Length: 494
Image (cartoon, rainbow, N blue to C red; front, side):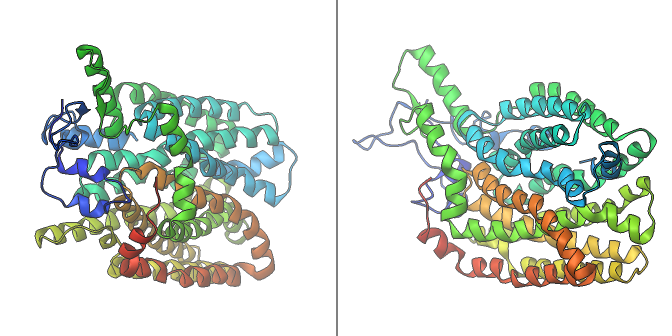
């Protein structure tokens, strides 16, 4: 019952006592907790040795990648919706798109704690079920208010994979493979809002905006049985608790417990978990500032995405169907970014492993990665803003969007890998902390951005955003230099 832990078990160290990054590189097997006499406590349930096949870290690669793989076609239909419901406000039009992202800001505050108490798999299943139900409600909406309400609920349910997907990756992937796995997982959530409008635009033109939602509901319904039968639980504390429960029943020993339980009831665990994302966001500078950087970058991107329908229709004469194509450059830049930076961050880790250098999370913020990423984002904004201002051929602003999307992915991936390495056991909570701020700006910045564009124009409006992005470039450089000291100084009790 009480066996030696694998190296990966050490990653669930107390963040107040040990750096998770240091624990990742501790190649000596840890032993089960000791009793007061110095002997292994026979009532602690652990993995059956470092090669226990039940440990998600020891799963075959095929099973790992299945779980990674398992973990917004709407904007082009906005003008048609406004006509049908007799609305003309550009703010209403923008909010119809961004209210979905607003759901991502609040869902993670509940989803992350639930996943760290009850596990990941059941949340994927119920998230799919509710997302499909709410999408059907959106398709049947008979007014702007009803449609907005269901869009918000779709965002709340849709926040499940966004919040706990990174946690699932951290559960099964060792540190040197985590960047590549995160990039594969991120392709779906990141490309959806960019690739989806291509199909959505033509579907809206050929039929109606309602069929966009019906198609999403059909796809969501297909994934319900897939998530139920094929996505397995990956969170080690929950798996060990299931093992302990089974052994208590088989042996009659009610004192058996896992090394993670710490004698807390489910109610106590949830009480601690529910405040964890906000504690990380508000009390831990490395989380606060990296989340702010990523949030501003995403807010800028969603501001551009929410205005593509108007900019390309009014300035370049794109039809309702062709406007969907304007989202492809953002998707292309994201795709290039996640592939390139996912590979590069892992190469940095493997290079240090080859030199027998203990892994520290700060390696994810190497200046050779973060400084170019931070610089090309404002470059893309300048290019997009001034070329649309002066009606330069539409291919040029699209190249600008590719560049800024690529830079944003560099910032996002370096930051997210850094935070996950720093708080590995609480990967879902630290992702939730980042997602809350990111989604708030992603939903609200487009509303303020419309007035900014009206006042400053596309050229100076996007230049202002570029200057803000440029001012944030030193943040990852500061954490690369001082991050370890800050992690030790501001080690929040989680």
